[in-house]
Image (tube, rainbow, N blue to C red; front, side):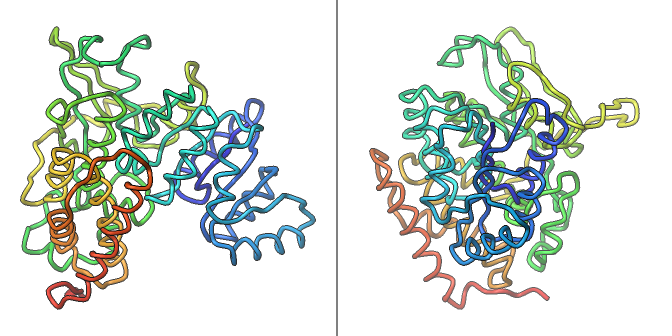
Length: 396
């Protein structure tokens, strides 16, 4: 049985599609969402989980009422406690961790502490608390399988029996591919007037609004670089980002003998989701076969750090260590939300991120509370700075 944390997001919906195609193998134990009552209601009526969770208490009340109106006796839980209860419940073997942002940390840790097979799509858990998270995975004998397309690709390109450190498998470096988002070739001066609608129009991947903006700034790739360091026990200099506009090669592993292994496929998150669900076997994901002749060519280029300053900020945070990564993740969440609400310009996302990262000293990460405190300090400072006249919406 599977629990899906973040069932109404793009990853959650794709996971349910894989479940639908393989209903003889998988049943749903729990579905969770933040506040999208109508969509979670429809998912509950179709997949009939034992438990549904709404992070927002008012939404939980609404879902309870709607389920009763539809003759359903599904138990409805609420809040962080409800999310953690669903994540750690004995009935579920698999937990898809797909809650976006820092909100996913505590529920995902609950799944780790219950020793589940965790399909990790919430990169923020590792960005914020990588050392603590990976230590907990080891201590509780949890099985951690990456679902981000890039990390899943790396996992598929590594020997099945590799052991840490990764150098024992003969790996020299990994190459994270990035599409470059919607503004890869946009004139730099034009970026100042970019609207949320344009930023959310990703050329290859259907994604939620927050991750779409992160892709447009390439902060998403920076967070993925941090995640890769924790997942595969890599130094930052062993991770390289390469722009690949077609999004066909999802990442590559470079070996010391000169071999470079790549995982390829159409840009569809159902591929890594199905791989994680069935590992070490494979199942039908519903993804169309790759037609290389139709694609014709694959292009690569180095990222332009003037165009994508957020990417460099992520590597700066890794170099600083400690709580710097949690600080960067927190301020970026505030910045992206402000941009989506037209309170902050597109180019000012990086400016706000940099200012907060430089203002707050990184502390050693020796307990979870220190991570949570750093997260809150960064959010508070970011909100204070947003009141400054230097920051503000200047678009249409």
